[in-house]
Length: 128
Image (cartoon, rainbow, N blue to C red; front, side, top):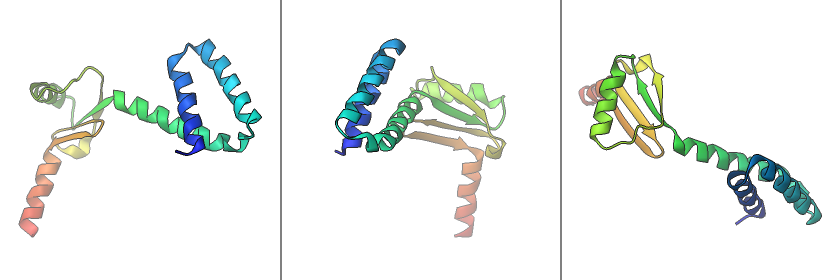
């Protein structure tokens, strides 16, 4: 594991496990430690990796439901809940390109039950 990755892990733990005031003090101590050890040149890489970790942690907590129109939301939710999906934290997006149906994304799970997908599959079968 790279040194900058180890440092970014430590910084992420500081940010996620303490209050805002404590995190501020701990971050100052962390920066002093990095500089004392002569690793100040790693700070840009540490920050970059830290930002990636924060983005990943935020991404995991939100699921996205894309529908073609507002009327499709309730039907999509019923279908997803029937399949056992947790819809507590969900972001609803209106995407007119879907024509109808929905697309659901959470972490590594993607459920595409859109008319667009069905039409594209039909087109591929006809043309091949």
